[in-house]
Length: 84
Length: 84
Length: 147
Length: 147
Image (cartoon, rainbow over all chains, first blue to last red; front, side):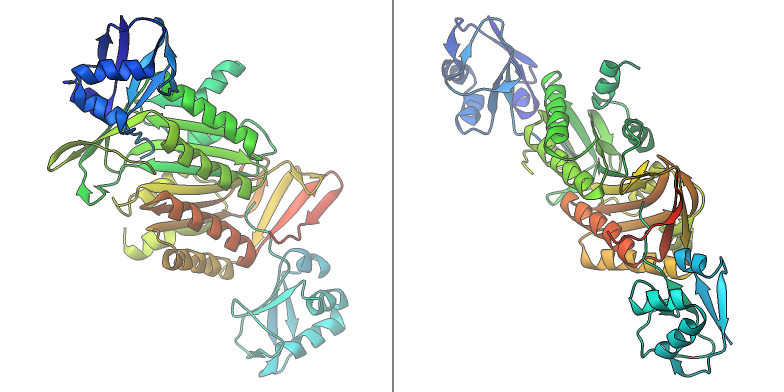
C-alpha cells in the first residue's frame, strides 16, 4: 500500500485529505500511479497529465518512467508559490 | 576673505587645518582660486589640476569657469570613499 | 554551537517571525572578510493580481522544502563569489505587511552579494514546495504562480 | 510624525549604529503595497586592497553629504518602480565587522527593489562627499577609491 502526500489545491480536490492510499504493486512506474489516481480522482489526474501538478518520489521531481518501490515517499505537488 | 573647507587627505596636506582663508576678490573664477591656492599649497594645487581633487561651490561640483562670490561655500573634495 | 547546528540555522522553515538583525548577525559572524550583505525580505502585500488580500497562509512539504532550501544555499555558495548565505521561509497564517521570506548573502564585494541574493529568491520560487492560500473578499484561493 | 520629520529619517548621516529591523520597519510602514524589500548593508572588512585594516574612520562634508543622499533617494524614487527608499551612512571610527552604510528599498515587486538598491549604493559611492581613513599596521591611509 502506497501513501501519497497531498498539498494545497490538490488536497482541496481530495476533500482536504492530507494523504491518499493506493494499492499499487511495487516496481511500477509513475505513469501507472497516475493512471490509478486518475480512475479515482479524475480532477487530480487531469492536472498531472497537464503538468500543472508534479509527482515527486523521495522528495525529487519524478518522470512518467520513474520506478516506485514500496518504501518510497510519494507526493503530488501543485504549482509552487513560496517567496511572498 | 573666502573660507575654503578641507577634508581627508587635502586636510592632511594642509597640516590638519579644517579651513583655509584666501583673499580672493569677489566675482573671480574657480580657475583663479586654484592659482591662488597653488601658490601657497602646491601639493594641493597639483591634485586639483590633475582632477584628483574637485572644487565645490555651494555644495555642487564646480568647473574652472564657475564664478565665486563672497558668500559662497567653497570646499576641496578628495576622491570619495563612502559606502564601506 | 557545532558546525551542524549552525548550518541548520542558516536554512530554516518556521512558523515564528524572525529578526532581520539577528539573521544578518549570523551571516556577519561567519567571516571578517565580509564587506557587503545583500538582503531580500518578502512581505505580504494587500493586493495580488488585482485581488484584495486579507491574510495569507503558507503550507510546505516538510522535509522536501528544507532539502530544496539547502540545495539553494549550497549552489549559491558554489556558483557565486560569496561567503555565506542564509535562507528562511515562514509557514502558517501571515498578516498583511508581515515577514514571509528572508535571504541574506554576505560577500567581500557588493555586486556578488546582490547577484547571489536575487538568484536565491528567484530559485526559491521555482523549486521549493511551498504553497500559498489567499483569503480574499471572494473566498479562499490557492495561488498558482510561477515567478 | 510630520511628513518632513519622517522624510528626514529616511536620509541620515549619523555617528550611532542602527538597527536594520528598525530601518526596514520605517520603509515597510509607508505602504501596504510593498511586497519586497531589498537591503544593502556595508560593513568594515579586515582587508582592503591587500592591506590589513584595524579600524576605519569616516569623515563627511556636513550639508553636502546629506544633500547628495537626498538626491539619491529622490532619483531612485523617480527612476525606478519602487515605493520607498532609505539611505543611511555612519561617520566616525568604526571597527571591523561593524555597520557603515545601509540602503533599504521597498517595492511591489522584487526585481525593481534589487535594481534600485544596487543603483543607490553604486551612486552613493560616486557622488557623496565621504572619506575613509584606514588604520593599518603601516600607519594611517586616506583611501582613494572609486567603485
